[in-house]
Image: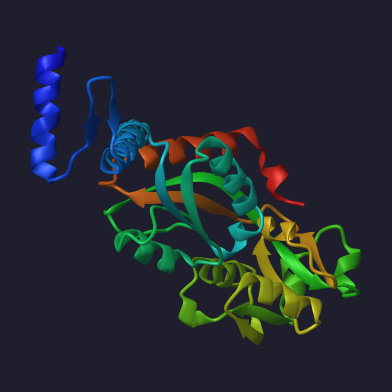
Length: 277
């Protein structure tokens, strides 16, 4: 800009602000205190505009924002640490909110009311508003107190558990897992004799370790080591429990797409045995 129009623009700005910005003499022009303050603020504003533009580009690429992820009880101890690390490494600028020990019904509710963006849960999920994709399956194993007679066996025949007291999930939680355990027991000719009801997987294993009873849990729970509790595979080709990822069908955010890609690659890169101690 040539000198005359630049001087005119500055004088218009001074008139608008009602303060002199430049002190002019025949030898030099220098900023007044008001001019120095305006220059400092203007530089900050321009930097903020540049940063906002960069943040918009990152948001469009799914590199910034907030992601809320739920994990069902048993996956809290095996999948959560691996998936959380992969997400933090893959999208480091994203604020992650990770929620462990969530039942499948609670996750479905969270996804529908938008307090969750992504869930790792156990099917079935009976709503058409969510996309559900199975990413892994695992067997049930027996959780036993150390010193229990069945710990000496390499595999536990399911029928041997018929007379044992069981530690189970509280039915008010409506866990998918508890229903699957009851179906498994029925397939082998018995109903579990309930000794204790719990609301969390960690508490369930702790009660088993204390000798309150035995339990049937997904193999991934064995990633949680509790003194006094041991895990043994069940004899026979028992049913496998599915682990799925779920998200809102109408959620097309770049961040979710990026997170889904990371979860997929993490699960595919790590064989099932890596999630089970």
